[in-house]
Length: 188
Image 1 (cartoon, helix red, strand yellow):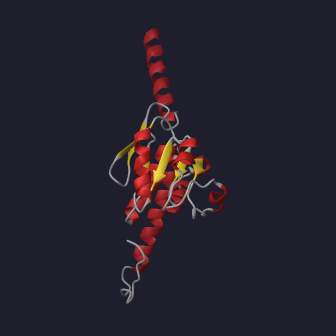
Image 2 (cartoon, helix red, strand yellow):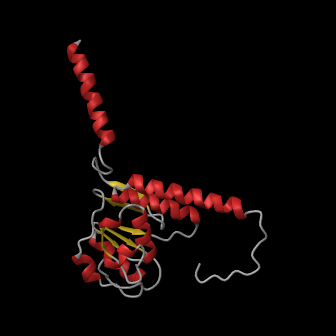
Image 3 (cartoon, one colour):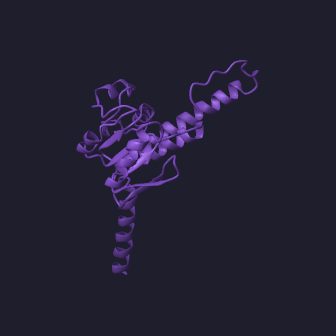
């Protein structure tokens, strides 16, 4: 009887350790990015290079700002982002500098001239999350996915929930109002 109780208690202890372990401590972390590709990191990302201003903002919102080691110009929000070294722009990336930073995750934008350069990083085995949220639902999902990759799930999930709540509030407030007479779109 005593042996059986010890066995049950040991099993409970192992289950409790698994529940309390940080994200990724028990194995690789995988998510699907905005290009519908599976992105896998061996452990929570601690050296992240963000190659687009929107990605930098989302990483900060997801609780991963402290892990960003490189950004691109115009990544200026939140203000802390201005202190992170630049690895180029949306037009031209400094691939050598990116590689020298030894990122365990690159968050890129699969658009513009940088997309070609981003493709040159893929054969190096650096996990690349392609961030292109084209609707509001995708923004919240990206917050959750980026947080998952960085092991900051609680912060990312809270930011996504807050975003969804604010979006729902805006819809409830404005859905019965008249349509705008003019709409000027800069980019899709």
